[in-house]
Image (cartoon, rainbow, N blue to C red):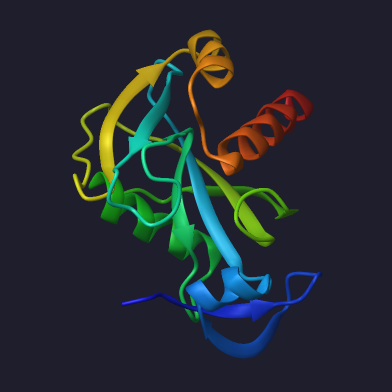
Length: 167
């Protein structure tokens, strides 16, 4: 069953139109996606490889965990739901920023969150084929060598810029 999402405008305002995510992607309609960059208490980043069975970007690596915001969900609610579904993590991710992301399959508003989580994650094998914890230096190297999703590159570079600006 395809997810139902709400169309939004170029200012991220809900238009009141419910559509399937598949249709939103095919038509290039703006909708919301929530992702979370997960770190452990030592500052390492969670990286995972998507299962070969997923419909979008099978087998590619990701720096963040996430998915479309369902009808009526806030970015934070969608991020928390996706963490629970994909990694078995119960956490309240903190929304850092949103931006209009034009990378990937179609344009969408991307809400980037951060969560510090335990390193004991229980990934859903239908979603996650592999996961590991990388230092920032290891992750920067992996981003150049491994095949990551377009959202990973864009969201992580903006995440690092956000963190630098805040420190």
